[in-house]
Length: 322
Image 1 (spheres, rainbow, N blue to C red):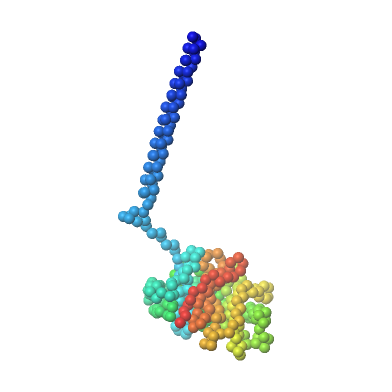
Image 2: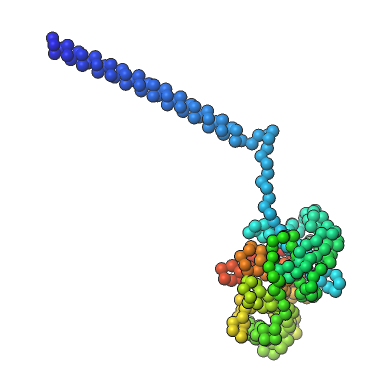
């Protein structure tokens, strides 16, 4: 009887322990379910409250600071200005859609309103101001008539830039005519490039220098040479060269070569490239090179940038095309 009583006691205690364990498990399950319901409710509230409300729309993102860069040219006493590019951080954007007249008008009213004054950039730095007098629509562009207040001698192939920015081009202007030694070294280099591109020897003396400028692109005191050259044969076959060269001892070394050999259309339109000016757009210390290129009954603007040790065309925009 004692052994039976002892076994019964053990069974009763074991049963009580199992009952307690079951009760505890039930409480844990109920707590887990309750916690899950609570978390679902909180997540639902957060999710709902994060959705835009039709009564209180989210405010629009604030636009980043941007600047417009213009090309300035002059013929006699008259100067004109075209928009070239909008600099938005590291992005280069077209000022407007040249195919939409309403957009061009909106741009003109904002930036070419009479009396607007902008900083003039010559040789990558401050060189005066330009004041807008009036503007009108071109075929697919807009042009401003401006008055330039500068000591730079603009005219013909000698052009400049202007900008709405107060920070771009805040360094010393570095642009001048090349010295006789620099000019001679560039011409020697230019002729070698023409020979490399199979130009007949009897035409070499007919090559014309349309522009040759010395400017410090890197701000390091060393002046690069930027030149444009043309050669028209009797059969009207054209050979054009756009060249960026840098000193190498007493000689010049080609840093960028754009050689074009082509037959112009019957109307005679050329696709030669001419230097406008330089301006450091991204703040890396090296000025981007602005140029203009001819085309069929029009022209366009180009921007060249030094990328990975090489000059590359990174932007173009139609100046006008009728």
